[in-house]
Image (cartoon, rainbow over all chains, first blue to last red; front, side, top):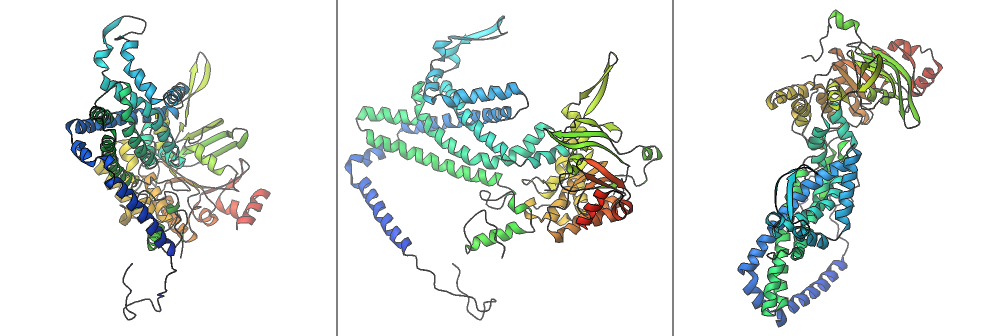
Length: 327
Length: 270
């Protein structure tokens, strides 16, 4: 905390300088956790079975680093496709058109209701199920056709499988986000003469993003690790497959699991930083910190948000975000 | 700067700005409006009073098509809202207008809400610029200049870059009025514009509305501010249980009401 001003310079007469309540619990918990953490680290470092020398040797192995690259590529491509598809599905779910609503519901039902592993196997076997794909008039003449295996390679099958599955989950997140925006917002936009699509793009979606981004960050991290299932396709260049392959060759599974775990942890940490900045961007106008700003509460009264921020900053009142404190 | 000529040309003066006939509105089984007829002359200020649940806000929302009506007709500036009559083989039917046409009709009517409904992710200036740029296709520089002019008119030019959450309720409502004026509406609707404000902030919003009335804007105002009705209104309409009980000049309706229900209501609020 700040230095105590001397009585002569303090503008507040008779400021209270009380002895704080003793908090022995903090010291006890710090000691207990500190001992447990030291034991865990000691166990990791001194146990030779971890073979940290092997971990070090393979951490930047070419196949491992390439595996990281493929895993990232799979994650980002699948996520990009999934986000676009999910927004489309969520809008269809809210549509006036019953056919679109029903289509979206069925899609989510199927892709959320079957295991992603099964779906990946299915996309891998697509070329066996449908050896040739063609473009033409339904039930009529075809314009051109091609071998499925040439177009849907293992990589694309993996991306497709991950994206289609992920889209079903994200669609529900987007739907919840769109539903969270105050209906008064679309009403005001309607009254100004804005079209439905403009209202969605300019008014509803930007506000829904505040609600959509945190769980989507969660989904991205989850997808990153789900990429380890692409051997079901089979796609065999991702991080988990690469480290497993090395482990099987040198008969040392534990150090290579550690290599993979370290990389996943590093990528996740970077994604978390990215998420923080995206949340801040969409938090614009909802208080300086974005995350904890309250759209409804701060709106009504004079100059409250900044006052409220100062009140919370001081930490002298109950830490309840839904409590308005008016001194 | 005027959004509405103070002296309308003689031809327009004869045609009403709003003409409502036989309006019924139901929400499911709830019969909210039970045959409302109302005429608002160009440049006139109509204040609608009545107890809560009397259908005042619904009536207002039917004027700009925020609610779909069940019977009757609403005309604004001589144009029927929401429907058009089509005669085919001697049979006349109403056809619902395309949403794009409805949107164009709405863009000529400004609306101010009880809860302001400013876009929280945009600054005051961006809120005012939004419709001219996105709906009318104005250039950003034109819209910006006009938005600053309007913010100045409501006394908030120094708050242009503030987000709604950084403004007081009265300031937010004044931005909302500027936002509605940015589309150069022929008619302004106010849905209890001061009901969500702290008492000391009501005056600043009513002041802006009074200036607007003086500039010749046609206004329909749902409010509980009897003082505003007395000073500014050309016509006071008293509603109860979905019908217009009494309407007329403010002195008449507010001072010497004919109907018992009006007298009871005024005895309650005054």
